[in-house]
Amino acid sequence: MKLCQDKSHKNQRIMMPPNNANGSQTMIWILSSLALLSLVAGHEDPSAWVNWTADDHWPEGELNCWHGFRDFDSLTQKRVYHVGVHAPAGIETAWREYNLTFTTYLNEVVGKRFKPNIEFIMEATDDPLRDWLDGDTTDVDFMYSDTGIFSCIATEVGAQPIATTVAKQSARGREYALDQFAGTMLVLASNEEIEDVEDLKGRRIGAQAFSDFAGAQAQFYVMGEEGLDFIVDPKQVVFTGNNDDIVKGVLSGAWDAGF
Image (cartoon, rainbow, N blue to C red; front, side):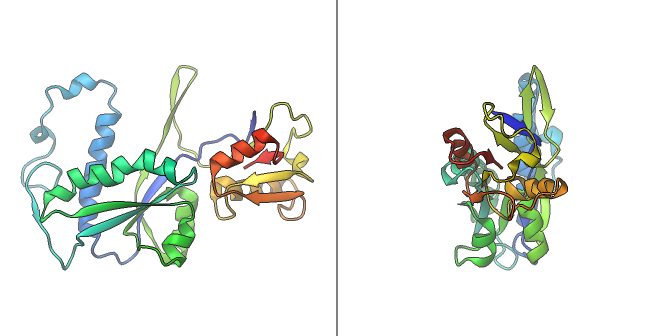
C-alpha cells in the first residue's frame, strides 16, 4: 500500500469535563498511578527495579500511590467513576487495549486506596461526540480520546486536559516518539491512477468520521489546499466509523482511497 501524509495520529489525551468537583481529588491519584505504570513499562533496564523501594520515590506524608489511605468523602468524591474511551478501531479492540489500564489497574491501585473502595468502569464508544455529549448513555467522568476529538469536546463543553500519552514506534532499528498528529491517505501500491492529492477527484473515498481529525478533517484540509472540495470533487465519501474497515475497504476495492 502507498501512504501519503504519513504522520502519526497516536497521541491521546485524558480529559475531565468542566465543573467536575467529584473528580479533582481522584484525578491526582489517577495521574500518579498512570505515571508509575508508564515509568515501569517504559524503563529501558528492568533490572533497575530489582532493589527499588517506594520510600525512595514517594516521601511519607505526601499524596502518592504508596503511603496511607484516604477516607471516602461523599461530598467531594463518587463511589463509581466512568472512564469513556474513544474506540476508532472498534469496541473490541478498545477493550483489549485499554480495559486493563482503565478498569483493572485503576481499581487495584487507586480504588483500593479509599475506605471504602471506589470503583472505575471503562465505557468504550466509537462515537464519543454522540455518546458523551448528546446521548442518553451513562455520563462519563473522564474521557480518553485522540487530540481531534478532544478539541471538539473542549470547544463544546469546556473539557480540560489532564494528561497526554505519546506513542512510540520502532522502525529500521530505531525508536521514535510519535509527537505529531495528522491524518493518513492510503491507496493500493498497484493503483497507478492515484499518485497525488489532485488524483482523488472523481474517486471513492473511505473515511473514519466527519468529526474525526485524523480520519477525515486533516485530509479534507489538505484537499482544500490543493483546490479540491471534499464534498463536490470525490465520486463518493463513505464514513465507516472504524479504521480497520477503511483498510479492508481499500484492499477489497470498495473504495479507491482511505483516510
